[in-house]
Image 1 (spheres, rainbow, N blue to C red):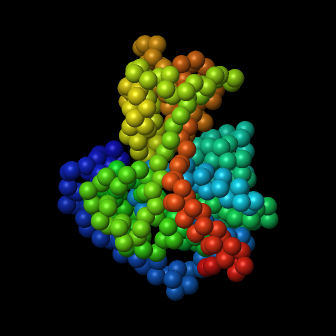
Image 2 (cartoon, helix red, strand yellow; image 1 turned 180 degrees about the vertical axis):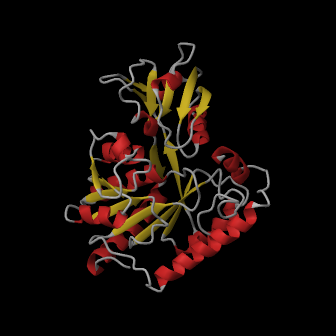
Image 3 (cartoon, rainbow, N blue to C red; image 1 turned 120 degrees about the horizontal axis):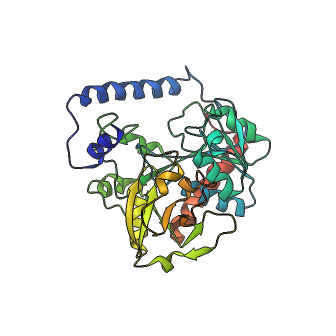
Length: 344
């Protein structure tokens, strides 16, 4: 069902007529919820330290996690102690805050938080109650990055960054379930920064975003790492012009496949649902070709013994001017939030 909906949302097919009334109802509920928080009938609660939310308006992956890692690195380089909070989608940890470290079980904390903790080295907390998760970090950090959570209005934030997939854009531009939008496009004007992942190639994207002066990032992949302990690293260029099995259980598998093709590889595509709990048998193919997967999938496959398994980490990159603008803007918001105790 999700795959069929995604094809409608981002393809050429029109949304089903029976979904339009549901989208209308959903839109009214979203608007009412925002009014409730704006009127302070429900409070947005402060964590005790400035909060930067990295989120999106659409269902599916846009590149939030790589940008969160970029921000963690850049803010740390400024001498700030950075902490990360995430929901921990699909984890068994429950609502209460739970610390994530490099040795955590992805089933308990979620695949993306485990990736974030390992790559960033920053204190990381997961929990469905993100206010409680952020407060659990507050005493140890200077700034808190929230990976996702744009719509989690209960957590007050000092800076909002919206990440957009340049190739898929906003799909058909409709709200759930008729389209991929979690909120109306007017929500973009309220964000502190808009970052487009890749070139804005979607037909309607450039014109919609022009008044917002969006920043542009790209995802770079340079090497493949073996899953086995002590396995070698190989430049991705060594796989050039080779056929490989490409495995992706992320929000937008097509982006990973495109990354491999751009590096000169010939991927045999194996797309799985986002957060899919891979098992070893799903990576056994009737040949001896290498199997390359995303880093997010790799955290779920650490115990697999197949020597053909590799993963490809990606890194967010921004041009010098856009990197300077984004970091300067975030620092101004964070330092302002630190003086005021965070905005509600």
